[in-house]
Length: 246
Length: 246
DNA sequence: CGCTATCTTGAGTAGCGTCAAGTCATGTGG
DNA sequence: CCACATGACTTGACGCTACTCAAGATAGCG
Image 1 (cartoon, helix red, strand yellow):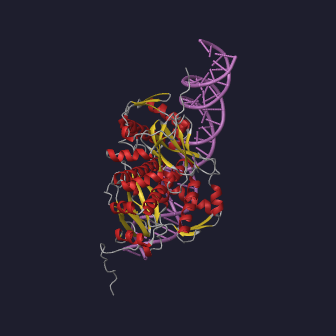
Image 2: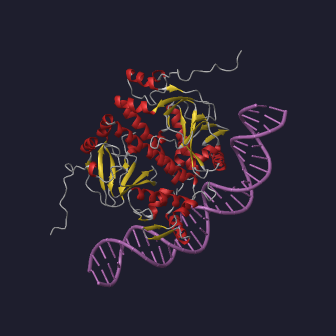
Image 3: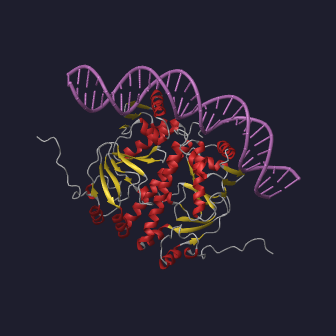
């Protein structure tokens, strides 16, 4: 028996938003059947990404926006001097690449943290279609706006929270996003390393590790390697804003 | 002689993007004459804001987006626990309020840092019009995307730069934005307090003050109260990325 | 089964925050 | 026009948080 999967013809592969369990979370939210089919026509399913593979690279030309269908991605901003920072983690139903519309060049790398399926949405087609379908236009604007709102939240976190507050906020945010996808809000697997969490939160990996240990001692969470159980979400929530803050 | 200016009828006041010196920086960039006139029809000039006045408040319903015509604004994100952080400073030609499209509620306060004139763009009208005018649609998307890209830059700054790097990056950013508006890139007046700069950069006002003094000793800048002269922009640029970084 | 990446924990330190005192600029009312 | 009040800024001394460096444990992968 062959151990390799037969290669898939990328071009011909058609997703069907209409049959995707995420369609109420993702770009097509709110569309009717006929509109869904029109959207389906412009969307391609990319070759699945293996863990560690790039979806796009900083500096690359914007072709498409991408939606995570399954899996887990991160985006990393790069500074000239080689510094690098995780700007976001993306799970199923979330849209990537919107930072590139302004300049037509991606300003970050997008990398798979686990094997992932990605829907490709050619941007020109999307703009065209959203002129015809006001609901789609409206929802696309909402998605971009939510990204801005999320960024403001991260800025608040980075600029005014101390280490343990940041980590608590991060865990609660993950929990809420898992819940929205029908997964347990209290037990989940971290797809990223301590270093990546640290990078996202503006902290060093040792600080993340210590904070995990401390939360565990306080019985707020249970950690075993990458698996997390939130044992006292309310406690975590209470922890945010307690420390005087900067 | 009356010392008070005669009140202006807010509703009837019509701006004219076509005659605005900022129109190539602002929303109408790239539009033709006829399109400009259609955009003019949906835009109102608000009553001028006095220093300290709110343009909108966190939690308020989204009605319109706003463009700064003259003056200087800040937006402040509020955290439940009362913490507050400056999320951005906005100068002429820049658009405010895009964070609210996702939820229909503003997630920050917008406050005038000096007397300012503001153009009001009813959001529903803008969506409508941008379906008719692809150039406008495209440019609106670019503006939202640029806001996302800017936010990523701020996240990088907050997450991975030390105090003096942050301030240097901030000064260079202001310089470049003044230059784009035809003002001197090397001499300008800070419209905000040290505390507001600190809040934006995730630092305390004392740290800002010390960094200014240090830059002055190094002859990178000259500071007198709120007026700044950049004496060695290259030096400031070199300073970013030198210190080991986090 | 061994190699490597990842994680944990400890000890020492640097950078920035905190607190405090004092200067300076701006505006107000007498 | 000056005296005074107020807010903004500067500077110093000290302390705490999170970083750095280092050693060892653990897990995942080939």
